[in-house]
Image 1 (tube, rainbow, N blue to C red):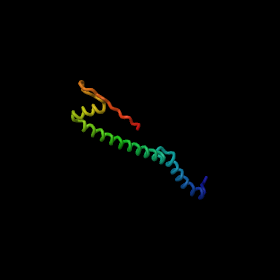
Image 2: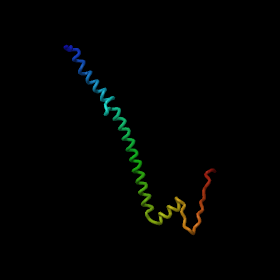
Image 3: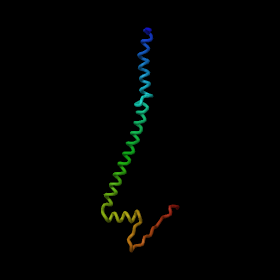
Image 4: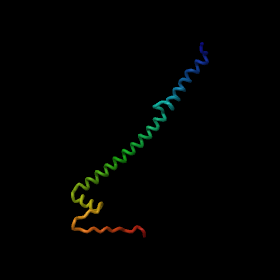
Length: 97
């Protein structure tokens, strides 16, 4: 069975259109998957930046408290530690005016 000249002209563009549609929507590396992956990458990069800033903040805090006196003061203020011969009074301010 021979193909008409008209059918031969339609086969090429049809194959190209089918290929493009397949690559855009159905392939495992489709454009839709690429968009989703790029969104996830951006989200993870923001998370990385957040944790890098937290690491910087924590390192700064560690450096500030590296001296023994600062460690004692920090423990007293933050965790209400006291020496054996001291009394600790906590004063809470009422936030209602």
